[in-house]
Image 1 (cartoon, rainbow, N blue to C red):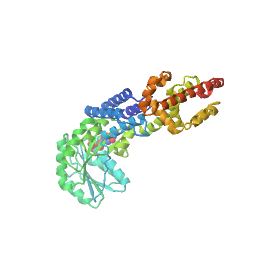
Image 2 (tube, rainbow, N blue to C red):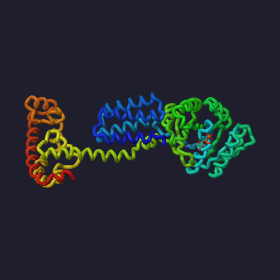
Image 3 (cartoon, helix red, strand yellow):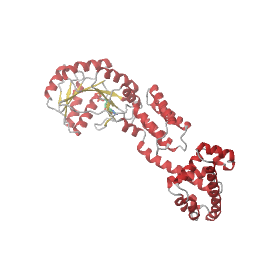
Image 4 (cartoon, helix red, strand yellow):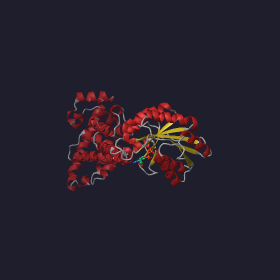
Length: 439
Ligand code: GDP
């Protein structure tokens, strides 16, 4: 679908999931990848730049909502902005009158005839029995093509290859099928200009008085599709669009975004030559698929697990080798939140559970929270080398986190005690060969 666009975007999202840090640099890199993919798909440069700017500024400025990781947040922003690029809301075909008269327009070769067949199949499945009227008086082959198509699907067709009066054909077809639920009028697709399409619509409009005019646009023409859609939607307020040939078309992204920009509703897309290669167009579902969001969710879960495991392993190693810093202690607190009580974590390591459990169980959640707040007022240097935290730094940290100096001292005491205990345990567990850590 859409040439390589889907593949490129899915790979970008996978790359984003695999990144260990989400920061300004990685966000810029991801945005660059998205830009490249969209431009290759003929999306208008201005649209691409607007989109990148929005993704970048939202990703850098917005705080992730509670419970959402920065990674998931960036993914959500990309998804939302891509959906907006395609007009956000799904426009549906509503058959709300009887007969519901649909006028089909489209340049020759756009896939109009094929699409009429597809729409008939779609309507049949929904229980509406459509009929087709052929008003194309220019191409004798047009009637024959429709005849074969409708015959296969048991769809009644009205037409007369010997009648050269399109308006007369429309009138007679309307009479023939006046009791049907849906009547589809095919028109001649000989035109080269948007203006001709509009003129034809106007002529037939008086006689048919359609409920809906559908313009079929060939997706392989890329962003040029915008011009056709614009002229069409300015001329009628009952117009909707079907974009065809999006299977494999390298320029499909350009066609879709350009049409969406005009505000004309895209109702269906054609994704192949067969009668079932036809879909209702829903921007959210479409973008989900294009970005490979189904896989992304499980990838995120896996990545978060791996990152947790990496941190856990490093923290544990530091504990055992006596390199335990305040940074490790902070990680330890976070792990307690995500993996359950510290005791459980330590119970997984032979010989470790008993001793630590007494220390850890004394820690209430409130205490842990207040320790975490104090630690967030420390510099990275202090966290990695707590020895340098003397009186003036203690004062600053207390002020920064709104607690008493004695609280900071208590935190440091807890840290020193934990470190001492860890060291002792590390020596003992050395006999176990550290195997438990590497499992
Ligand atoms: P018309 O002249 O507008 O009536 O166009 P046709 O319906 O005859 O289609 C022109 C060509 O485009 C035919 O070869 C169709 O098989 C092909 N076509 C139509 N829709 C699609 C589509 O969604 N995907 C692909 N790959 N080909 C399509």
